[in-house]
Amino acid sequence: MTHTVTRGLKAGAAMTAACGATMMVSSAIQRGTPWAGLNAMATAVGVRRRRFGKHFDADVSVPGLAVLTGGLLAWGIFYEGAVRPVARNRVAAGVLSGLGGYALDRWVLPDWVLPNFRKAMGSRGTVAKYVALGVASALATEGRGGVLAGKRIAVLAADGFEQVELTLPVKALRAKGATVEIVSLRRGRIVGMHLNVPGSRTKVDRTVEKVNAARYDGLFVPGGFIGPDLVRQSEEARDLVRAFDAAGKPIAVICHGPWVLASAEILKGRQLTSWPGIRDDLVHAGAVWRNEAVVVDGNLVSSRGPQDLPAFTRAMVDLFAGRAPAAALQTRVESSSPPRLSPPALALHGVATLPKVARALRTVGLVAVTALVARRAGVLAAAAALT
Image (cartoon, rainbow, N blue to C red; front, side, top):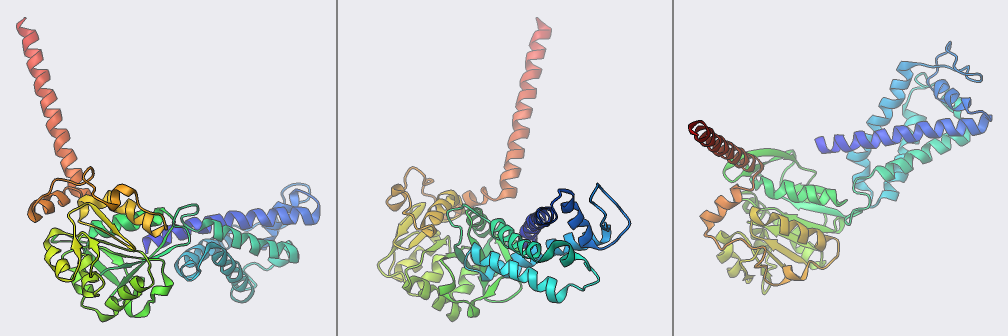
C-alpha cells in the first residue's frame, strides 16, 4: 500500500504540473497574451477581486486551487492503484487516465467547485488538458526505460515466506520497470519470516484462484520454511505453475520455492538447485539437483538461498527480460559460489545477509576497530612519555 501511495503521489505531481502548464499555454495562445495563462489558472478556481498583470483580471482562490491540486494528487494514487494494473502498457494506461479525468470533471466534480473552468480554457484547451493528463500518466509509469518495462510478474507466496527472499527480488524487478503483483492463498496481508522470527506484512494483490497465467509474463516463487509448503498444498497454485510452464513462460525459484514446482510435477529431467535440505524431495520428483549459486535450465532459474541473492536477481531479471543469462551462470558458477557448507552453516551464512544482522555486524566491527586504534594510540602515547 505504501509503495502504491508513494508512486501515486509522484504520478499526481507530474499530472498537476502537466495540466497546469497546458492550461496556461493553451489560454495564452487562445487569448494572444502571456498573461492569459495566469488568467486561466485564476479563472479556473472561480473567485474574483484579485488582479495581477495588465491582462489578468480573473479570480484567485487558495481553496479552489487546493481542490484542483488535491484532486490530481488523489487521481494519481487511484491511477497507480487501480488504473495502471489493468492496463497492458503505458499507452493504454495513459488513455485510461485521460478518459478517467474527463469523466471525473464531467460527471463527478460538482459545478460549484470550479465553475469557470471550461469557460476559461475553452473547448480546445480543455481537450489539451486531458491529453496532457494522459501523457503525464504514461510517462509517470514506474520503470520507464527499464528492461522489464511493460512486463507483469506474479509473485506466488504465502504466510511464512522468507522476508529477504521476497523483498529484495521484488525491489529489483520494480526497479527494472516490471509491474509486480503478490498472489497468495488468501486476501489481506501475509506475514514474512526471518528464519524463525516473524517479519513484516506484505499486501496481497490477488488470490490464486482469481488469476490466470495469461495475464503475466513471468512467475517468481520465493523461499521460506513455511510459505512454499503452504502454497504447494493448493491445487489452484499447482495448476497456475503448470500453466506458466506449459506456456513456456519464465519461472524463478529460490531456497524452498522449488517445493512448489515439485508438487506441480514439472521437474522430471530438469536441472535446478535449492536449499540443500530439500534436495532429496526434488530428486524424488525427477530433478537433477546441483549445488550451485544459480542454475538455469530453459525457462527455469533457481538458486539456493539468501547468500546467492545478488547472482540470482541478475539471472532472474535477464530471464524475465528474454535475455540469455550470462554463460557462466548456465554451467558451474565456482567463482561466485560460497564454500560448500552444511545446511546449518548455510543457514547461519544466510542470516548474515539480513539487513539488521548485517548492520549489527558492521557496528560490532566498527567498535572493535575503534577500540584497537585507541589501544594502539595509548601504547604509542605511553612510549612517547617514557622517552
